Image (cartoon, helix red, strand yellow):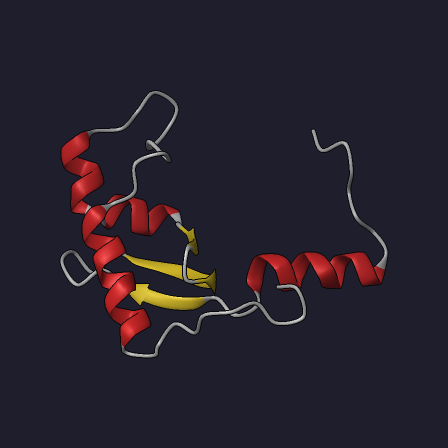
Length: 100
């Protein structure tokens, strides 16, 4: 259970900006799993997986599921290469705006 549930409009706006703004759909060039991506810097990449993308990812299927779900500490190398290609192509902008 959450210890803090935002209710103020400004806080909800901040939460939405932090979790949703500037996310770009990127599909893996290998298995076509589609995730949402944001890069706040050259060295930082946020990737939001959904259940469909986790099921579609062939690399995760080959590895098998870790107890309690997928292993979040080992990214899919094929997807990360696809994200790098999208960044080079300009489809994923780099840099935070207004702190997000």
